[in-house]
Image (cartoon, rainbow over all chains, first blue to last red; front, side):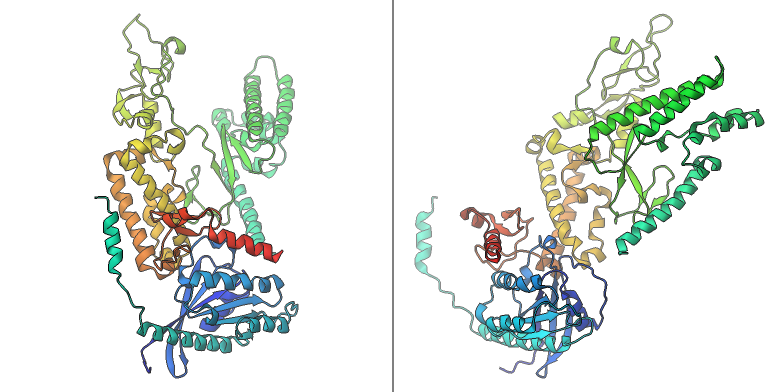
Length: 206
Length: 418
């Protein structure tokens, strides 16, 4: 299967408010960082073209609002995602604790074909800060328990590990995308049951 | 210092400055120098010395020093002022122009005291709004920043920069229409005089016809009532009757002035109207949809760049709520123009969310119950939105369940955490 057509990889970034989802995306796409906090409202995406294993792919990175009050809108954009990036702030233990619910909610809303093997990547952000509260070991254990998801310690501010993390994200997403392609080559058979039509006719009141 | 504190700080500085300038224009500069000292606001000593020096321009001088009660906002301040005026009255000579003015001043202060006290009682202790009372209007201090079209000051006509300036808006207490159809009380009740100019209706010299105003039910003289006609709000609201009837000139001016103000809450005044007037019902549904769509546009950079919501500029209140109507809205609904207007906008909005905009489409919902891939939206017909978690389901799907699956999941998760 050596198709060389352009692929679009859909990546969703999730995590509590203020962990640095937008900053990570901005650092990766625009190489920019600002210390000013501005809550994301609703959802938005940026695109970036990257080379993965000699293939040019377009990454569509969806940044979401972590705050509950901006979650009144739907998350239909989860559908068709190729990779989900879970972000926590290593200085905020609560943001680490809510990773489970972010992951569960994503799996329910996105309902991927193979939830057990869906590619997630875990990022522990803000490692440049001194008041670290989530030990590396704990985060690695959690990531290992969830089907060995890759774990990166990043700093959007200093640009530490951001490039590497997104490279892995793109790679895993592409692997997922290729699998989807295989599925698409063998669409589900549609079986038309002639009996069902008869039953309906019988029930018709006219 | 956070950015908000900084903005507040700047606001205060700027308003102090502007307050001084507008104050200097409105009152005499001398008064503003010591505005903290209440005495100078009403003391006649100031005025007296000017009266003497500028005898010819005494009347003009009087007007150039208007006494402004609006600076006295609390009952204590007003009571203090009353005491001082009382003392001044006793100091003046028995029958003098000055005493007459002071007594008038005393009366107006007492009326104001009553006014302020009544309003404060009405509002109760717990109200945190900052209020200024001027000529029976209640001006409420506004905290929010207004992003849409500029706000103008109705006094000076200048733009109000809501980001950096303090501003007040009148609560608009008397802006509701008379709800009864022509509440006629009869000529004896108004002492056989014109309700407006108090001219006597008499048979002595010539016959002056008392004309009834179909809006407020009062009688007017032919000068105050020129038999001009206007639609009557109460007739529209109760009977959907738009026939124009003769009204007094005052009422006509009021109705024209108010026509575009969204001051009618149809759900409260006459909700039955929606079932009788089909177009009204359709407009109501469109408006409710638009309020939901607003949430999509507020979080969509394309919609902001295209200024989609600005397409409703001439009906700005449609963006703010779905229940308030202006008299003009009802007239437009009756003549059919409203339906065309709102249908066009509704369709354009829907097209943006469901077809053209990838971000808005992404913010749609997928029914968790039937797992159908088709994206649904809260403004679609045949959908149900959970009031607490905002999840959207097909009506038929939700009917099969007792409660929202997302809410159940959330509460289970909360229990696990505990």
